[in-house]
Image 1: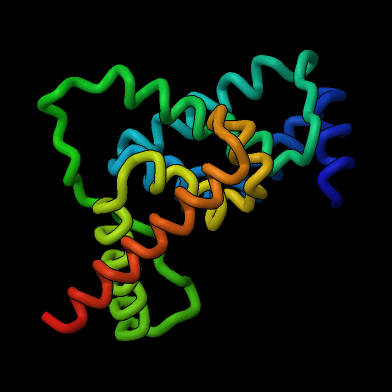
Image 2 (image 1 turned 120 degrees about the vertical axis):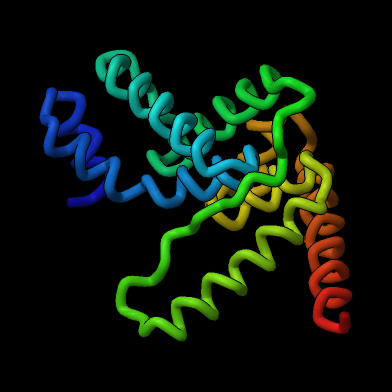
Length: 179
């Protein structure tokens, strides 16, 4: 079923459509929340909050671009709200468990998990604004124009944050590789 048909069915009260929307976008939403919040548990809470609100607003939802962008933007907004409410002593280095590939063998799963963790740890060395743009671009699939609108910045600022963030990632990963 295409996205517009899913939305239409959901707006008519079809809970199967809501379930399909959730399964279709939960991994992307969770990844964005994890990268922004640095916590598996907080990311789950964030995605849960967004879906509860999404479910409660079925008759009032106005999706201007596509559903994925709408949901990713909602997760980013909720994550920002959660970060504002963080206490200064909250642990920013909580372990993140990422989903493993279901078809891979145990060794391949372990290698993929370790590589993912290295990239995640490098991403945590980026400034929050750079991490946010990288996450929205790569995991959320948003365009620079959408990111700019979402973050309240210019498109060129979104592009430069992305470029500087990727440069920082490259430098961190290459220094880790040579260590």
